[in-house]
Image (cartoon, rainbow, N blue to C red):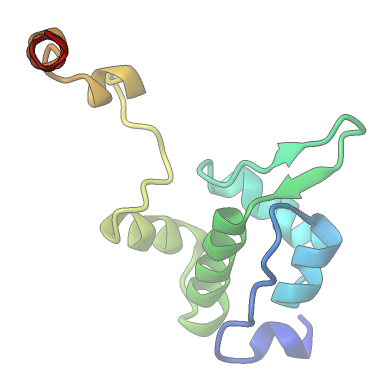
Length: 126
């Protein structure tokens, strides 16, 4: 474990679209293999891969990694404890069984509302 990994306070995240694993590793103060391990343990963490297979982390991935690091290194949670804490915070790390994303987004039929909005727009155009 490096000294940077034990420092308190979150580092300033640069204003970039994507970060390479080495940049995230330096930012968090953990080795790249630790980040790859966390990817397997926290399904919500899924960086994109470039055409050459390199991991590309988004800002939200880096923020999630900072939270994971805080739970594991500062609060001394186990991996399972960190998963549960994140679920309590509303950051689900496991997909919900039985419901797809589409079912959650469209739990009610959106067509009547769309029809009303289109009728209103048509009325404005007449």
